[in-house]
Length: 347
Image (tube, rainbow, N blue to C red):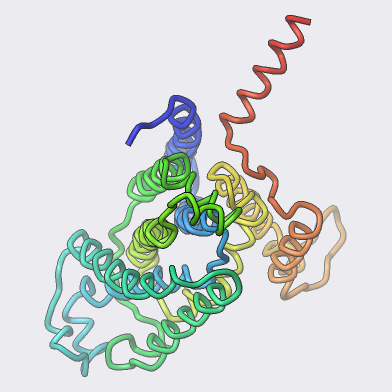
């Protein structure tokens, strides 16, 4: 696959920003802020993974967090020490409470299991268009959540799954985020990405010229699921405790707000939206607790974070439906400024 010079330069800029931020946080930040940055990187991988499918196929995907949940639980079931599973999963099927493998191998197995499930769902998903496809993705999320909540012997049901080895590091998260950005950008600017976006603009015309729409959608679906699986595994191995609630509507709307604000057709927009919403959410959480600012004691404002996310989606869809970046990448902005400057000099 040929990588264009502008694709490479734009990708390197985003990757450099993430790596530099990771170095600064690892060197100078307090443990709390390092934890916050790790969560940001996991959300960044999820948003970029969501962009791979939504941004190129133009099909709203509500089920992406389901893949993250599947991967996280597979890692938890396989990597948790046997001593803990004998009490936490005493009646686990298939003898899984007697098995313990290393976190790295567990991540590989989790990604393969997630991809296997994604391929089964994807075969049906790629045949749908518009609203039916969107509803089907939401139904998939509900199915995953119901299984996680009700398969008590394997997942502990609605209770927290604890004891997962905390093995993920900030370096792992930075490397995974950079990989997600590179993969998303290369796919976006590839022949497959261009054809898939063209098909989303005019389905009939794309079919008429021989674009294999289902094949392209399936490729985007699988790449998106792969990135979600990595994010889920990182999340489980970092927090050490997960529950079905961690992978349901709250995280779905958070990551959708990030993608919509930045621009679902742009990888740069995905990163920008993730940064802005993360900062905004942390500010809202601070205000929720009723802090004292400049001598004035503010009242408790519980639910302010949810209000903030809803407001972002409403305002974005009303005034900027294509997001802050639209279809532009960071190299597009730089290139246009260069062309404009050259034109002024010639004039």
